[in-house]
Image (tube, rainbow, N blue to C red; front, side):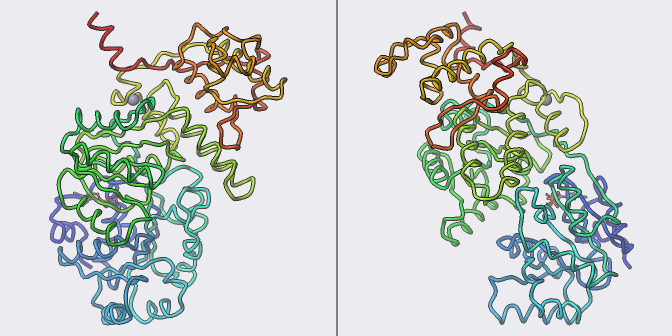
Length: 521
Ligand code: ADP
Ligand code: ZN
């Protein structure tokens, strides 16, 4: 068998393996199984591509990324690697040509969509040729606990049963302990060697800003810090993808939309422009990005709150694969919490499913509200200890925290007072009562008589919204699923009202322009 390092140098033109690549490759080349947890951009592909070239036979790669298979095969062909794929986008003649090449021993790598392995013909085809190894890419798709579950991944344990002598390598960029354990058990990889790389991406600066005017904030980020740079902007809904892309384009920025509702041809064209042209900003839902290998993405911006830390980390990990300084920026506000809590409440699925979604969201909210280093918080979520990084917003300008117990009590007792009247309201009206505003609505509802009217005049509107948001994040306050953002108490609220629990809060930063004024004056 050829030497892996020689293959790396001859085919890819790289000098040396990175990190644990050499160990991983030696394991698979030697016929052993491996489970690889490595962050996006860490270099997972070579971990199975090199062994596929070294071992006799064809490396079979199971991947959910059908839309990218053609690109991957093209990129390998350009290096002189013989690669093909089988998926639902091909006509019978194309499929036949790939099958024939495989049977003739003329393929180094064969990419398969997972559902192909449910088809008996595919299994028999693989039997008639020679399989060098199985690579299971995006292995977290097997995890029901995770955020990207694909039912077809569950049956991949059959690979081991059917071909016990063929080494398997499973790879993912998602690395919580729960996902890790689930991948190992579902794919029967308990006996495999586990390789867990550091998940730190030191060149990415993590920042989470209060959402104020998100489009203006995004525009400022692009103009002031990333003019002419390639970037990805994630939005929750298809309509906000389109509106944001139009808004940026109207401001002279090369911005393209991408979401699953767009025509396949449009999506393919936009993706290919993003990959091939310089300085394109892709505005997308999370449908975009998995498997996209563009080294010089300089920023990833989120205009809406991601549903989980895993998702957030994977999406932001698409910035700065080349190792150069890059920005991960997220705008986050009270409406995000209200909306996501409500989406969970009204989602389909059983109680266990909702509890899982809530745990994911809570971890994401804890990251948003932390007063300590974002990176420490992120890495500890993935089970890795680290020191404050000096390259995130909380390290660069540490937020103040303050004792919000009294403010929380004022707010919660307002909710109680109104509930006693059989009434419930959203954050805006509650804050008006606390600040003692005599609005037409307050007069009409007679809310100047509520005993907490005006007792919160010492805090600003923004401060109060911060209090509400953080109480929601900590589940000391709940939101109804009525669609109006109506607030209610939770089981935990009582402890705060009784003074049995203190409520440390993060101070709302002043607006940047305000800060500038104070400094100069
Ligand atoms: P992942 O799949 O883990 O996100 P990739 O396999 O796409 O990462 O690798 C990320 C980038 O790093 C690619 O451009 C790849 O060519 C490059 N790369 C990987 N390993 C090496 C290496 N040993 N030397 C130089 N470049 C590498
Ligand atoms: Zn930090």
